[in-house]
Amino acid sequence: MRKCTLCPRNCAVNREKGEKGICGQTIEIKAARAALHYWEEPCISGSEGSGAVFFSGCPLHCVFCQNQNIANGTAGKKITTERLAEIFMELQQKGANNINLVTAGHFAPQVINALISAKEHGLSIPIVYNTSSYEAVETIKSLEGLVDIYLPDFKFMDESLSQKYSHAGDYSQVAKTAIAEMVRQTGPAVFRGGNEEGLMERGTIVRHLILPGCIEDSKRVIRYLYKTYGDNIYISIMNQFTPLPGLEKYPELNRRVTEAEYEEVVDYAISLGVECGFIQEGETAEESFIPEFDGEGL
Image 1: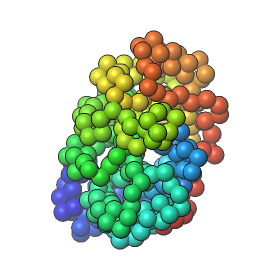
Image 2: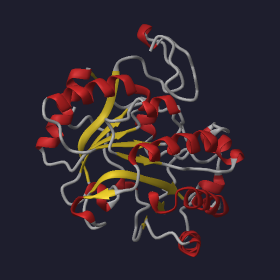
Image 3: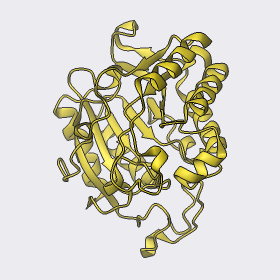
Image 4: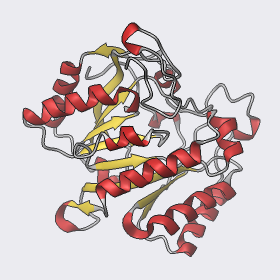
């Protein structure tokens, strides 16, 4: 924290002294919500819900982010490492299927300490690490033995797209390296009860959110993932892109993904041979699917 290099931005700011890098956060943990969350993949949320802790701040800042008020740090409450450990235990007591750490990388040292403490006090449900994949591989390595399930995005293959929409021309290479480490740690998926109908206990699910007009890049992402990992990972193809206020500078993104666009990408995945995956049906591109970041559970 004295010279922060937790993410690929390598800001090298002294967060202990209150300096802020691109993530916008100091050494103090800031979170916006800790509650049961029902909108992840079925093997994560189940019927009881995933115990999601949404952390404030982000090193990526995508122009289309649906969680902008927490990504930019305007929403959230400061909590101690001790309180974070208590939150994990409270979510377990509420019946959460797992602890779901959402965008936690810039607080990795504090999260690690909280997890160790909570596990010493009886935390026994799986730990999910939910990330944009814009992660330093050293940070992912530091989580080995603590995280059971990785839930990373793979947003782009095209460097021009990642630079334009996420201010990170190196995104695809960073994501490839980070995901490779995640898969190394978890190995093939393991489900409760031994079949895919149960909750996931270990494994990696890579998410890809299709952007309007970017289906060729989506195909490149899915091809890379399947050719690299085959059935050792699950691929979640998402159509829930929601155009929110602020996209006036990016009119090409100021619409929803069409049914035809989504079906073309899904059909392409099937043609490759993808069988271990998830698709979305129905009206998922609704603002109502975005939770209220009101400090619940903190």
